[in-house]
Each structure stands twice: as C-alpha cells, then as structure tokens.
Length: 345
Image: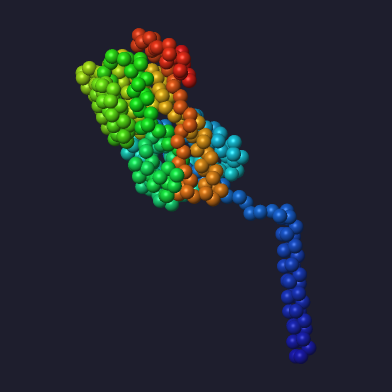
C-alpha cells in the first residue's frame, strides 16, 4: 500500500512538472510571436458629421460627393490621418428638414461618436443631445456667444468649439453689393427663424442707409413660394436671401423662383450661385470645412473644447454668375466684376 501511494505521489509530481513546463513553453511561444515593442491595436476613431442641407448619401465614405465633407477629409489627410485605419465617419444629412436635426443628432450620440462635426444650423439640436461629446462647429452662421453656444470666443467653456462664418457680420456687406447691381430697387429679405439675427442686421443696415427692405419670413417650402408673391406685390425688385437650414435645403426652389420673378438675388453661400443664383458674398465654406479638421486633430490629441478658442473665417469670396445676369437683362458694374473672386459664365 505504501509503495502504491509513493508511485501516485511521484506520478502527480511528474504531471505537475510537465504541466508547468508546457505552460512556460506556451508563454515563450506567444512572446516570440509578438514583435518586440509591439503596442495594442490602435482604436479607430468614429467622427460623426451632421449637415443641414445635404442628404446622407452625399456625405458617406472616404470619397463623398459633397464638396464640404470632402474638404474636411482632405484636411484630415493633410494632418496624417488615414480613413479606415485611423478614423471613419458616420455622417447624417438633414436635407434641409429642420425637424429631423434632433433625431439625427441623437443617433450620433448613441453610436457613440468620439467627436461630432456639425454645420451651423444643426448646432441647437446637437447641443441639446449631448453636453459631453466634443462638438466642432463649422459654418456656424450665428453668434456663438450671443446664441448660447459659448461663454466667450476665447474660452468657450463647454463642449463646443470650431469656426464661425460670420454671416450676421457680413449681412450689411451683401446688401451693399446687391444695391450696386440694383441701386433703385426695393429689396425683399427672405429669412427664417434660425437666421433671425441676420435679418435684424439687414434691417438695421437698410434703415441707416434709407433703403426699403421688405421682410419675408418663411417656415416651410410652401411658404417660400407665397413669400415671393408677397415681396413682389409689395414692390420689391431685388432679393436678399438670408440662409438658414431650411432655406439652404430649398436652394434650387429659391433660385428658380428668383429667376421666374426676374429678381436679382444675393446669397451668403456660393452653392446658390452654382445652382443658377446671381451672386454670393460670404465665407469660403470649403476652406472652413478643411480647417475644421485641425480642431478634430487637437481634440483627439487631448485638447478640451472648453479651452479651444472659436475661430472666425479668414477667407471670404464674391461669386457672380454672369450667365444669370444676362438672362435677367442685368449689366453688372465693371467695378464689381473686377472684385469678384470667381465669375461663372
């Protein structure tokens, strides 16, 4: 019996010794298979994108058809980021339907996105959806401080930073350029709730110069057509379009109605002119979206939006569609043609 127990003890000890040797051997094999100094796989950053006037299909993938989002991706590449390896985008397009912004913002928050790049008109919805995910605003037409997105431009204090395209500040300039083309015409100003501050700036500028401006507030696509009839009935013979999310989404309808009513029109964004509008003066959105990548880069490196100063647009452009001018029977002053950054013929 004693011999049997001794044999069992020796067998158990041998098994333990063999198991230990096998375990150590496995560890050695695993160590040998991993390159010296290898790091854990890098996280692929998820960047949410929310725009106001485009469809989601136009924004998707590494080569989107939308020029502004393509400019953002170009900015990321210039900073050394590779799509699919370092980051991916989860875009949502509001297509000009303001009632969708809240649900689209909520979708990005629930993903969750690591950072959200948001067009100006969508900011209230994104801000309501999250107070923790960093938000980079681009094309922010509103005054970020006055409208409650930041405590100050230098120290935003919350989770929003980015770029403001100063639409309010340049409204008077657009009105002045429009009057160079139609000096004697009364002007109708087309605006919506999200662009109220720009309408107020136009009203102040017109009053100071003794110009008549007719207010045309719109709330949906149907009200836009009614607004044109109201404006022309009131004697307006020129049009100032104050862009907001819904107006931007209905740009082709507005351009077509301006042509049908033979109204020389001034816009804040060049995309209206590319769609057949007469002229635009405002921030270069392509440049702004490209520059927004710098904010995303800094956030990914650990910077806090609360401490990142909001920047204002550095590049503005005057675009004139001479083909549209000819169709309207307008003679654009040579001085204005010479000042244009781009002429569409």
